[in-house]
Picture 1 (cartoon, rainbow, N blue to C red):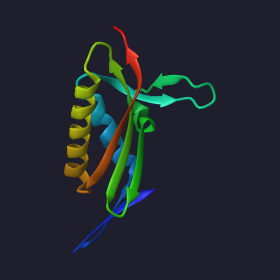
Picture 2: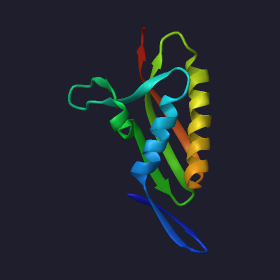
Picture 3: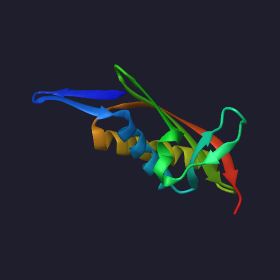
Length: 117
Protein backbone atom coordinates (compact mmCIF):
# COMPACT_ATOMS: atom_id res chain seq x y z
CA UNK A 1 0.00 0.00 0.00
CA UNK A 2 1.17 3.52 -0.73
CA UNK A 3 0.62 6.92 0.81
CA UNK A 4 0.36 9.76 -1.67
CA UNK A 5 1.31 13.38 -1.05
CA UNK A 6 0.19 15.99 -3.56
CA UNK A 7 1.87 19.36 -3.94
CA UNK A 8 2.26 22.01 -6.63
CA UNK A 9 4.97 19.96 -8.38
CA UNK A 10 3.09 16.66 -8.60
CA UNK A 11 2.50 13.55 -6.53
CA UNK A 12 4.90 11.75 -4.22
CA UNK A 13 4.10 8.09 -3.53
CA UNK A 14 5.59 6.62 -0.34
CA UNK A 15 5.31 2.90 0.31
CA UNK A 16 3.92 2.10 3.77
CA UNK A 17 6.91 -0.21 4.29
CA UNK A 18 9.14 2.89 4.32
CA UNK A 19 7.01 4.60 6.96
CA UNK A 20 6.87 1.39 9.01
CA UNK A 21 10.68 1.11 8.87
CA UNK A 22 11.03 4.72 10.10
CA UNK A 23 8.65 3.96 12.97
CA UNK A 24 10.41 0.68 13.86
CA UNK A 25 13.91 2.16 13.82
CA UNK A 26 12.79 5.16 15.87
CA UNK A 27 11.08 2.88 18.39
CA UNK A 28 14.18 0.76 18.93
CA UNK A 29 16.21 3.91 19.67
CA UNK A 30 13.92 4.85 22.58
CA UNK A 31 15.03 4.25 26.15
CA UNK A 32 13.44 1.16 27.70
CA UNK A 33 12.53 -0.50 24.41
CA UNK A 34 14.24 -3.85 23.82
CA UNK A 35 12.83 -4.21 20.33
CA UNK A 36 9.80 -4.74 18.15
CA UNK A 37 7.64 -7.82 18.63
CA UNK A 38 5.59 -10.09 16.40
CA UNK A 39 3.01 -12.58 17.62
CA UNK A 40 2.82 -16.00 16.03
CA UNK A 41 -0.91 -16.42 15.47
CA UNK A 42 -0.77 -20.21 15.38
CA UNK A 43 0.91 -20.81 18.75
CA UNK A 44 0.46 -17.41 20.42
CA UNK A 45 4.18 -16.91 21.10
CA UNK A 46 5.85 -13.52 20.98
CA UNK A 47 9.03 -13.18 18.93
CA UNK A 48 11.55 -10.38 19.30
CA UNK A 49 12.26 -9.14 15.78
CA UNK A 50 15.70 -8.60 14.31
CA UNK A 51 16.67 -5.28 12.74
CA UNK A 52 15.83 -6.64 9.26
CA UNK A 53 12.18 -7.30 10.08
CA UNK A 54 11.20 -4.39 12.34
CA UNK A 55 8.27 -3.53 10.12
CA UNK A 56 6.41 -6.68 11.25
CA UNK A 57 5.98 -5.03 14.65
CA UNK A 58 4.37 -1.95 13.08
CA UNK A 59 0.87 -1.71 11.64
CA UNK A 60 -0.10 1.35 9.60
CA UNK A 61 -3.47 2.54 8.45
CA UNK A 62 -3.73 5.49 6.08
CA UNK A 63 -6.90 7.54 6.16
CA UNK A 64 -7.90 10.86 4.65
CA UNK A 65 -6.88 12.79 7.78
CA UNK A 66 -3.49 11.10 8.32
CA UNK A 67 -1.75 8.00 9.64
CA UNK A 68 -2.81 5.63 12.40
CA UNK A 69 0.06 3.57 13.81
CA UNK A 70 0.14 0.47 16.04
CA UNK A 71 3.50 -0.43 17.64
CA UNK A 72 4.12 -3.84 19.21
CA UNK A 73 7.16 -3.69 21.50
CA UNK A 74 9.10 -5.50 24.20
CA UNK A 75 10.25 -3.37 27.15
CA UNK A 76 12.97 -3.64 29.78
CA UNK A 77 11.86 -4.93 33.19
CA UNK A 78 11.82 -2.34 35.97
CA UNK A 79 11.12 0.71 33.83
CA UNK A 80 7.98 2.84 33.87
CA UNK A 81 5.77 1.59 31.06
CA UNK A 82 3.83 4.84 31.09
CA UNK A 83 7.00 6.91 30.65
CA UNK A 84 8.35 4.58 27.95
CA UNK A 85 5.07 4.64 26.00
CA UNK A 86 4.82 8.44 26.22
CA UNK A 87 8.37 8.95 24.96
CA UNK A 88 7.86 6.32 22.26
CA UNK A 89 4.69 8.00 20.97
CA UNK A 90 6.32 11.44 20.92
CA UNK A 91 9.49 10.25 19.18
CA UNK A 92 7.75 8.15 16.52
CA UNK A 93 5.18 10.87 15.79
CA UNK A 94 7.90 13.52 15.43
CA UNK A 95 10.13 11.36 13.21
CA UNK A 96 7.33 10.29 10.84
CA UNK A 97 5.96 13.80 10.48
CA UNK A 98 9.45 15.22 9.98
CA UNK A 99 10.48 12.57 7.44
CA UNK A 100 7.40 12.21 5.26
CA UNK A 101 5.33 15.28 6.16
CA UNK A 102 2.14 13.29 6.82
CA UNK A 103 0.17 14.02 10.01
CA UNK A 104 0.09 11.19 12.53
CA UNK A 105 -3.37 11.15 14.12
CA UNK A 106 -3.00 8.24 16.52
CA UNK A 107 -0.30 5.91 17.85
CA UNK A 108 -1.24 2.85 19.89
CA UNK A 109 1.48 1.06 21.85
CA UNK A 110 1.08 -2.64 22.63
CA UNK A 111 3.50 -4.03 25.21
CA UNK A 112 3.94 -7.63 24.06
CA UNK A 113 6.56 -8.64 26.59
CA UNK A 114 9.06 -7.67 29.27
CA UNK A 115 12.72 -8.62 29.11
CA UNK A 116 14.52 -9.36 32.36
CA UNK A 117 18.27 -8.87 32.08
